[in-house]
Image 1 (cartoon, rainbow, N blue to C red):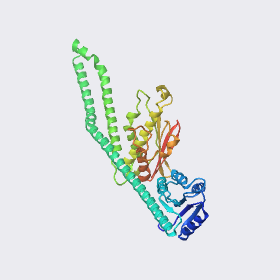
Image 2 (image 1 turned 90 degrees about the vertical axis):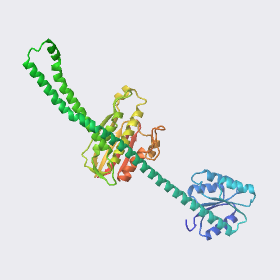
Image 3 (image 1 turned 135 degrees about the vertical axis):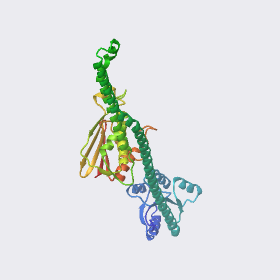
Length: 418
């Protein structure tokens, strides 16, 4: 409002006063609205909000003081500046006016230049206040976005370093174990050959040695199985180490080729301890329905963080749904997480769904808001889904949608451009 024009509502029950003030303000370039009572003024405010109100104190029905109180009590009209107009110049009336929220006080009879000066001053102050509030809101939003980015980077960096460190520590000892399994197998085979040769050369070694050789057939059958078990377990640990390295791969300032299925699988591996059966419930079933996906250009570490947050939230939702159910009831209707991937209209679609309690209608619109959480104090920061939305929408120009139904579960659907 640089030219200081705007809509001014004049509230006065005296036609002469209305005529004098409205003519002066109209000549100065202001739009004018008129109300002859407090009730009518409140009705007009329901239809259109003015930029400033000139309000007479003494009026039939509700007086100016009560009208002001009601205007200031309404969040929609609270910030409109009000200037009282009255012939009452006593201190108590002025103090009461300011206590109710008025910004100024004009005494009757009116002086045109004074009225115009006060109106322009308070319109300018109101405009400056609004601009300042908008700037503060914009700065606060920018600061929150910056904080969210820092938190996201720190969380991913800390988790990535931890996981990479664990993978590195696993690597050397497991390489030693797996590398020596074949040597053990060969040595055991040679040992059995020596024993067989001894038995052939000395068919009657004596009662003591024959007693010691009674378990030879059992060992000959069991030891190779044991060695194969060691080999399989070693291969499993190697696969875990490889998945940890996949999950912890660091992001650069440029996108990289990435296999989304590897990212999902590595995340499931890290969360495996939360999926296993325990004393309260059977194992959470994870169903993967993977489509044929190409490698996509993305920030792999960030997408892994998205999968981590969504899958961890799904597990939390399932555990919440289990609180009122017995072990046998959960067995009859088992906890499930279903992960689907597909190509649709030149986009990669990833769906992560659970059959938990669902998200209440009252908070559906808030779930992506920063700092909003339904979890108990100390168990949730309210950053997980806000970070997910930023990574998918801002950093990858994708979309995220949420579908939920009470007592049937929640599904998050991500789309990413190829």
